[in-house]
Length: 293
Image (cartoon, rainbow, N blue to C red):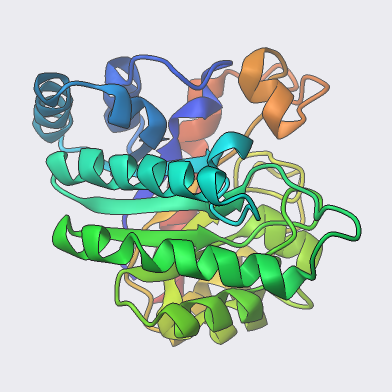
Protein backbone atom coordinates (compact mmCIF):
# COMPACT_ATOMS: atom_id res chain seq x y z
CA UNK A 1 0.00 0.00 0.00
CA UNK A 2 1.34 3.41 -0.95
CA UNK A 3 -1.45 5.69 0.26
CA UNK A 4 -0.58 9.29 0.97
CA UNK A 5 -0.48 10.23 4.65
CA UNK A 6 -1.62 13.59 5.97
CA UNK A 7 -2.39 15.56 9.10
CA UNK A 8 -5.08 18.06 10.04
CA UNK A 9 -3.72 21.56 10.60
CA UNK A 10 -5.70 22.09 13.83
CA UNK A 11 -3.46 19.61 15.62
CA UNK A 12 -1.31 22.70 16.20
CA UNK A 13 -3.91 25.46 16.53
CA UNK A 14 -6.53 26.65 18.98
CA UNK A 15 -8.55 28.53 16.36
CA UNK A 16 -10.03 27.37 13.06
CA UNK A 17 -9.31 30.47 10.98
CA UNK A 18 -5.51 30.77 10.78
CA UNK A 19 -2.88 31.22 8.04
CA UNK A 20 -2.02 27.84 6.54
CA UNK A 21 1.47 28.60 5.23
CA UNK A 22 3.45 27.59 8.35
CA UNK A 23 1.54 24.30 8.62
CA UNK A 24 2.24 23.45 4.99
CA UNK A 25 5.93 23.87 5.73
CA UNK A 26 5.63 21.91 8.95
CA UNK A 27 3.79 19.05 7.23
CA UNK A 28 6.57 18.63 4.68
CA UNK A 29 9.32 18.92 7.28
CA UNK A 30 7.73 16.14 9.35
CA UNK A 31 7.32 13.70 6.48
CA UNK A 32 3.65 14.12 5.52
CA UNK A 33 2.26 14.14 1.99
CA UNK A 34 -0.94 16.05 2.76
CA UNK A 35 -2.15 18.89 4.95
CA UNK A 36 -5.89 19.01 5.58
CA UNK A 37 -7.28 22.51 6.11
CA UNK A 38 -10.53 24.29 6.89
CA UNK A 39 -12.46 24.88 3.67
CA UNK A 40 -14.30 27.80 5.26
CA UNK A 41 -11.06 29.77 5.29
CA UNK A 42 -10.38 28.81 1.67
CA UNK A 43 -13.84 30.00 0.61
CA UNK A 44 -13.26 33.43 2.19
CA UNK A 45 -10.00 33.99 0.31
CA UNK A 46 -9.72 35.97 -2.90
CA UNK A 47 -8.75 34.22 -6.12
CA UNK A 48 -5.26 35.70 -5.82
CA UNK A 49 -4.90 34.47 -2.23
CA UNK A 50 -6.01 30.98 -3.20
CA UNK A 51 -3.55 30.90 -6.09
CA UNK A 52 -0.66 31.95 -3.84
CA UNK A 53 -1.56 29.28 -1.28
CA UNK A 54 -1.85 26.64 -3.97
CA UNK A 55 1.54 27.58 -5.41
CA UNK A 56 3.15 27.48 -1.97
CA UNK A 57 1.75 24.00 -1.27
CA UNK A 58 2.98 22.81 -4.67
CA UNK A 59 6.43 24.27 -4.01
CA UNK A 60 6.62 22.21 -0.82
CA UNK A 61 5.15 19.13 -2.57
CA UNK A 62 2.25 19.08 -0.14
CA UNK A 63 -1.22 18.15 -1.33
CA UNK A 64 -4.13 19.94 0.33
CA UNK A 65 -7.40 18.33 1.37
CA UNK A 66 -10.32 20.15 2.94
CA UNK A 67 -12.76 19.66 5.78
CA UNK A 68 -15.65 21.49 7.45
CA UNK A 69 -18.71 20.97 9.63
CA UNK A 70 -21.73 23.03 8.60
CA UNK A 71 -22.72 25.75 11.13
CA UNK A 72 -26.34 25.60 12.32
CA UNK A 73 -27.33 28.63 10.23
CA UNK A 74 -26.24 26.71 7.11
CA UNK A 75 -27.91 23.39 7.99
CA UNK A 76 -28.89 21.75 4.70
CA UNK A 77 -31.10 19.27 6.58
CA UNK A 78 -33.09 21.99 8.33
CA UNK A 79 -36.88 21.97 8.00
CA UNK A 80 -36.60 25.71 7.30
CA UNK A 81 -36.29 26.26 3.57
CA UNK A 82 -34.37 29.54 3.87
CA UNK A 83 -31.77 27.87 6.11
CA UNK A 84 -31.36 25.03 3.61
CA UNK A 85 -31.00 27.50 0.76
CA UNK A 86 -28.27 29.38 2.63
CA UNK A 87 -26.57 26.07 3.39
CA UNK A 88 -26.60 25.03 -0.25
CA UNK A 89 -25.07 28.39 -1.22
CA UNK A 90 -22.48 28.06 1.55
CA UNK A 91 -21.49 24.55 0.45
CA UNK A 92 -21.39 25.60 -3.19
CA UNK A 93 -18.99 28.40 -2.30
CA UNK A 94 -16.73 25.87 -0.58
CA UNK A 95 -16.76 23.74 -3.72
CA UNK A 96 -15.99 26.67 -6.01
CA UNK A 97 -13.12 27.80 -3.79
CA UNK A 98 -11.62 24.32 -3.78
CA UNK A 99 -12.14 24.19 -7.54
CA UNK A 100 -9.87 27.22 -7.84
CA UNK A 101 -7.32 25.32 -5.76
CA UNK A 102 -7.35 22.55 -8.36
CA UNK A 103 -10.11 20.43 -6.84
CA UNK A 104 -9.70 17.61 -4.37
CA UNK A 105 -11.49 16.15 -1.39
CA UNK A 106 -13.95 18.11 0.76
CA UNK A 107 -15.00 16.08 3.77
CA UNK A 108 -16.73 16.52 7.10
CA UNK A 109 -20.28 16.97 8.29
CA UNK A 110 -21.52 18.29 4.95
CA UNK A 111 -24.96 16.69 5.24
CA UNK A 112 -26.25 18.70 8.22
CA UNK A 113 -25.26 20.96 11.08
CA UNK A 114 -22.35 20.22 13.38
CA UNK A 115 -22.88 19.55 16.18
CA UNK A 116 -26.55 18.63 16.10
CA UNK A 117 -29.10 16.63 18.08
CA UNK A 118 -32.40 15.63 16.50
CA UNK A 119 -35.12 18.05 17.68
CA UNK A 120 -37.65 16.32 19.89
CA UNK A 121 -41.02 15.50 18.40
CA UNK A 122 -40.79 17.61 15.25
CA UNK A 123 -40.00 15.16 12.47
CA UNK A 124 -38.72 11.65 11.99
CA UNK A 125 -35.03 11.03 11.33
CA UNK A 126 -35.81 9.91 7.79
CA UNK A 127 -37.45 13.28 7.12
CA UNK A 128 -34.20 15.08 7.94
CA UNK A 129 -32.26 12.59 5.83
CA UNK A 130 -34.53 13.25 2.87
CA UNK A 131 -33.97 17.00 3.18
CA UNK A 132 -30.22 16.44 3.41
CA UNK A 133 -30.16 14.17 0.36
CA UNK A 134 -32.18 16.68 -1.65
CA UNK A 135 -29.76 19.48 -0.69
CA UNK A 136 -26.59 17.51 -1.47
CA UNK A 137 -28.11 16.48 -4.80
CA UNK A 138 -28.29 20.18 -5.67
CA UNK A 139 -24.51 20.64 -5.28
CA UNK A 140 -23.28 17.46 -6.96
CA UNK A 141 -23.10 19.09 -10.41
CA UNK A 142 -20.84 21.84 -9.04
CA UNK A 143 -18.71 19.20 -7.32
CA UNK A 144 -18.34 17.20 -10.53
CA UNK A 145 -17.54 20.28 -12.63
CA UNK A 146 -14.90 21.47 -10.14
CA UNK A 147 -13.40 18.01 -9.57
CA UNK A 148 -14.33 18.05 -5.90
CA UNK A 149 -15.23 14.79 -4.16
CA UNK A 150 -17.65 15.29 -1.27
CA UNK A 151 -17.01 12.84 1.56
CA UNK A 152 -19.72 12.59 4.19
CA UNK A 153 -18.01 12.03 7.53
CA UNK A 154 -19.59 9.27 9.59
CA UNK A 155 -19.52 10.55 13.16
CA UNK A 156 -20.67 9.46 16.58
CA UNK A 157 -24.20 9.97 17.90
CA UNK A 158 -23.10 12.74 20.26
CA UNK A 159 -22.05 15.01 17.37
CA UNK A 160 -24.71 14.31 14.72
CA UNK A 161 -27.75 12.08 14.32
CA UNK A 162 -28.03 11.45 10.59
CA UNK A 163 -25.02 9.29 9.65
CA UNK A 164 -23.44 7.28 12.46
CA UNK A 165 -22.34 4.07 10.73
CA UNK A 166 -20.72 3.03 7.47
CA UNK A 167 -23.89 1.20 6.48
CA UNK A 168 -25.94 4.40 6.82
CA UNK A 169 -23.33 6.32 4.84
CA UNK A 170 -23.34 3.82 1.99
CA UNK A 171 -27.14 3.98 1.76
CA UNK A 172 -26.92 7.79 1.63
CA UNK A 173 -24.41 7.67 -1.24
CA UNK A 174 -26.42 5.06 -3.12
CA UNK A 175 -29.49 7.29 -2.98
CA UNK A 176 -27.61 10.30 -4.37
CA UNK A 177 -25.80 8.16 -6.96
CA UNK A 178 -22.99 10.53 -7.89
CA UNK A 179 -19.36 9.48 -8.39
CA UNK A 180 -18.39 12.61 -6.45
CA UNK A 181 -20.30 11.72 -3.27
CA UNK A 182 -18.59 9.25 -0.97
CA UNK A 183 -18.05 8.73 2.76
CA UNK A 184 -15.27 9.41 5.22
CA UNK A 185 -14.55 6.91 7.97
CA UNK A 186 -12.76 8.11 11.12
CA UNK A 187 -11.24 5.63 13.57
CA UNK A 188 -12.23 7.80 16.55
CA UNK A 189 -15.90 7.71 15.58
CA UNK A 190 -15.83 4.09 14.38
CA UNK A 191 -14.51 3.06 17.78
CA UNK A 192 -17.73 4.43 19.30
CA UNK A 193 -20.38 3.36 16.80
CA UNK A 194 -19.27 0.36 14.74
CA UNK A 195 -19.43 -3.27 15.82
CA UNK A 196 -16.03 -3.67 14.17
CA UNK A 197 -13.69 -1.15 12.59
CA UNK A 198 -12.59 -3.66 9.97
CA UNK A 199 -16.12 -4.69 9.03
CA UNK A 200 -17.08 -1.01 8.68
CA UNK A 201 -14.32 -0.56 6.11
CA UNK A 202 -15.49 -3.63 4.20
CA UNK A 203 -19.07 -2.34 4.25
CA UNK A 204 -17.92 1.03 2.92
CA UNK A 205 -16.10 -0.62 0.02
CA UNK A 206 -16.05 1.49 -3.13
CA UNK A 207 -17.91 4.29 -1.36
CA UNK A 208 -14.97 5.01 0.93
CA UNK A 209 -13.40 8.25 -0.29
CA UNK A 210 -11.36 9.45 2.66
CA UNK A 211 -10.07 8.21 6.02
CA UNK A 212 -9.30 10.03 9.26
CA UNK A 213 -6.93 8.44 11.76
CA UNK A 214 -6.64 8.89 15.50
CA UNK A 215 -6.61 6.86 18.66
CA UNK A 216 -9.80 6.20 20.60
CA UNK A 217 -9.15 9.27 22.80
CA UNK A 218 -7.96 11.65 20.04
CA UNK A 219 -4.26 10.94 20.53
CA UNK A 220 -1.98 10.52 17.47
CA UNK A 221 -1.90 7.05 15.89
CA UNK A 222 0.58 4.70 17.48
CA UNK A 223 1.20 6.89 20.51
CA UNK A 224 1.15 3.79 22.71
CA UNK A 225 -1.86 4.89 24.73
CA UNK A 226 -4.81 3.73 22.60
CA UNK A 227 -6.49 0.56 21.39
CA UNK A 228 -7.29 1.10 17.71
CA UNK A 229 -6.43 -2.12 15.76
CA UNK A 230 -4.07 -0.52 13.26
CA UNK A 231 -2.86 -3.75 11.64
CA UNK A 232 -6.40 -4.97 11.05
CA UNK A 233 -7.43 -1.56 9.70
CA UNK A 234 -4.68 -1.58 7.09
CA UNK A 235 -5.53 -5.13 6.03
CA UNK A 236 -9.19 -4.20 5.56
CA UNK A 237 -8.25 -1.10 3.53
CA UNK A 238 -6.10 -3.30 1.31
CA UNK A 239 -8.98 -5.76 0.85
CA UNK A 240 -11.21 -3.04 -0.60
CA UNK A 241 -8.35 -1.75 -2.77
CA UNK A 242 -8.42 1.65 -1.07
CA UNK A 243 -5.97 4.05 -2.71
CA UNK A 244 -7.17 7.24 -1.03
CA UNK A 245 -5.54 9.37 1.62
CA UNK A 246 -5.06 8.63 5.31
CA UNK A 247 -5.22 11.87 7.28
CA UNK A 248 -4.60 11.86 11.01
CA UNK A 249 -6.79 14.15 13.07
CA UNK A 250 -5.52 14.17 16.66
CA UNK A 251 -6.51 16.85 19.16
CA UNK A 252 -4.55 17.15 22.39
CA UNK A 253 -4.54 20.70 23.72
CA UNK A 254 -7.57 22.51 25.21
CA UNK A 255 -8.42 26.14 24.61
CA UNK A 256 -9.78 28.39 21.90
CA UNK A 257 -12.62 27.57 19.55
CA UNK A 258 -11.01 24.32 18.45
CA UNK A 259 -10.81 22.97 22.00
CA UNK A 260 -14.38 24.12 22.68
CA UNK A 261 -15.85 22.55 19.55
CA UNK A 262 -13.92 19.27 19.80
CA UNK A 263 -14.57 19.04 23.57
CA UNK A 264 -10.94 18.87 24.67
CA UNK A 265 -11.28 19.74 28.35
CA UNK A 266 -7.87 18.58 29.61
CA UNK A 267 -4.34 18.74 28.29
CA UNK A 268 -3.66 15.34 26.72
CA UNK A 269 -0.23 16.22 25.38
CA UNK A 270 1.44 14.57 28.40
CA UNK A 271 4.44 16.82 27.97
CA UNK A 272 4.90 15.75 24.35
CA UNK A 273 6.52 18.04 21.82
CA UNK A 274 3.75 18.18 19.21
CA UNK A 275 6.05 18.17 16.18
CA UNK A 276 7.89 15.11 17.45
CA UNK A 277 4.65 13.23 18.10
CA UNK A 278 3.32 14.11 14.66
CA UNK A 279 6.54 12.91 13.04
CA UNK A 280 6.45 9.64 14.96
CA UNK A 281 2.78 9.11 14.09
CA UNK A 282 3.51 9.72 10.41
CA UNK A 283 6.32 7.17 10.46
CA UNK A 284 4.09 4.72 12.35
CA UNK A 285 1.31 4.86 9.75
CA UNK A 286 3.74 4.59 6.83
CA UNK A 287 5.28 1.54 8.50
CA UNK A 288 1.84 -0.05 8.94
CA UNK A 289 1.13 0.56 5.26
CA UNK A 290 4.36 -1.19 4.32
CA UNK A 291 3.57 -4.11 6.59
CA UNK A 292 0.14 -4.49 4.97
CA UNK A 293 1.88 -5.19 1.67
